[in-house]
Image 1 (tube, rainbow, N blue to C red):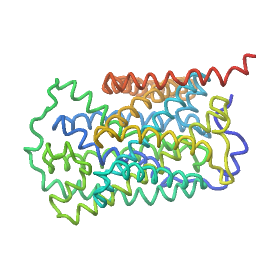
Image 2: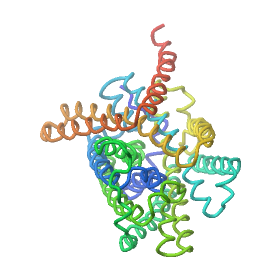
Image 3: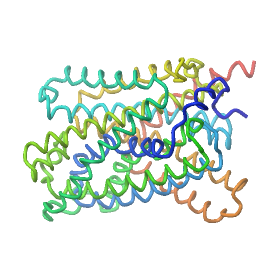
Image 4: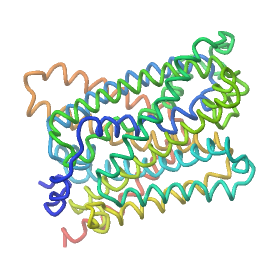
Length: 442
């Protein structure tokens, strides 16, 4: 049974693999991106209760990190992450749905990241806030710069990711650690400002904040490119997720406690605004620069993934062959370019909304689209545990069960409009599957 990689790809990967810290930076770098930098604005309408949403989202992310970390141990030597695990355990059609859903999620994620990047660049170039055409062109320019970087060999991409991860975490941690001394308790009131029930607000904010954790599975996707994958993937996935949880909760408490709720709700650069309140105007520019680096790093990592998932599916005949073609650096360049065209289109279509509204819509759409791969991955994990990990079967199956329930809950929290569009986009892939498989039945 194919697992999403051809032998022609192996020489590139066998010579130049990435290690634990690069794999961890891929996990942390793909999670810490646009989500944390714009989420405080999206959550302002809910008040202090959004912190409970963060705690639930963190718990779910840790559960899923354990699932993906152990999948890397149970099915080493695979490329494609959730797709490959599902393809091996459940077969071709579920594998296709996972690859398609994940691919759709990546379009939306990268479009949201580009919107967030433009928001923080507006700190330096105010014209980006007032001129939609300039904002769109800037976003497109960054998307295509990172697309070019990802046509190079994977170690070049990994170096960029490691550097941007280090640079991006520094200002977030500083805001979190120093900002605690400037928190005003009144900014957390009313505790539930949404007008809905507490449970409804918690459900919605958990779905919103979970977007910031998308990417905890990224170390499993270029599996054959990782040194000693059987142990490295598990360690990198769990370590990266725990680092991210600590950074998120600390910094979010600080931002919500520093910036008044009515100001936060319309802010295009919440962390920069928070820094300005306790450090002065110079700090606003320093933190905004960190945010720009952060979003660049996240875009770099996700563009890597937007090529790897379709490539793995194409190798198994479940995506068009063009997505499986590699250039001399071993990069699926054609697939990356085609995906970036879709990212560009989605970003342009949503710039008619306010920055925060456009970000929130694409963020929730991305979250919903990736939940299908997560649900199938937890099911695949349960099957692989039955077959290969009988010693720890009961405990691991319980973790898989909790992760499955959490993923279902996130679907509820995404809201009717996003669920509708997510379902439409997922079902739109079925005709492509039928077309690709028609030759096998003839």
